[in-house]
Amino acid sequence: MKSGYICSSIGKKQVMAISGLAWCGFVLSHMLGNLLYLVSASAYNQYGNAITSNKPVYYTIEVGLLITFLVHVIFAIWVSIENSNARPVAYAVSPSGKGAASFASKTMKYSGILIFVFLILHLIKFRFGTYYPFDLNGAEVRDLHRLMTEAFLGAGYTAWYLICLTVLGFHLSHALWSSLQTLSLLPSGKEKMFSCLSSIFGWAVAIGFALNPIIIYMRGE
Ligand code: HEM
Image (cartoon, rainbow, N blue to C red; front, side, top):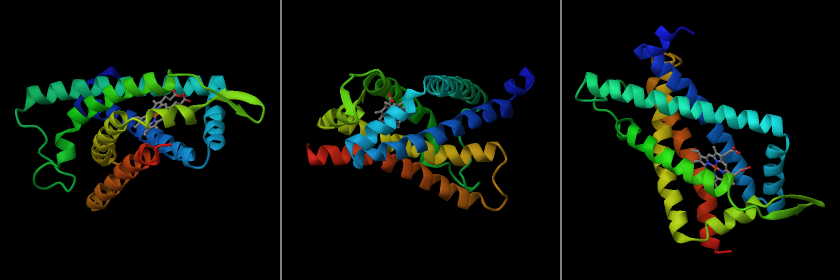
């Protein structure tokens, strides 16, 4: 890939789109995996252990996530600085191609900043947080089920997650459609349908993630 291409306006947007799509895949699989919490402590901890026990694969995925995340953020800042220098009024296009930009598209920058802050705090709490031991058929594994339960018994922590997940819903709703459009993957005449599918994806991920905090808090286990 030539540096001239990456520095071009479309090149930067396509790099953002590809790195963003990789994260769309990750958040979907992460959300689905988290639902195992609702099955049982063993099921969830077994799943967590299965992901983390193959160290070469696990670290490769982590490094991949880190690189794609940093690339996405750096290019988002770059594009956004260029946009604000180039035109005082940003975001003129809506998913349907007509009329005013949607709320989600106008607020991508701000939702992105909040998701960035959320992610740092999230990793501190869950990825690098307390290690509780769990006996899984005689083998000791990390008790992520307990960690999650304790986290969402608190009203403040649960509310913070629900706010961030709402913002994530808006961000993803626009992101998927926008990435496909930037990569010219939208079949012509189907823009409206894909805009709708993108919203369904964004809100399904956000609601799927929100289930655990809501259920844990309401149960008050
Ligand atoms: C209620 C919502 C969520 C819950 C309960 C949750 C739970 C967890 C848990 C328990 C871990 C630790 C996994 C491990 O160390 O093996 C984790 C890691 C992680 N989560 Fe979440 N998560 C949620 C939402 C999100 C969202 C919205 C994102 C992204 C925007 C995200 C990104 C990550 C990342 C990047 C990791 C680190 C993966 C790794 O390196 O192992 N999570 N999450």
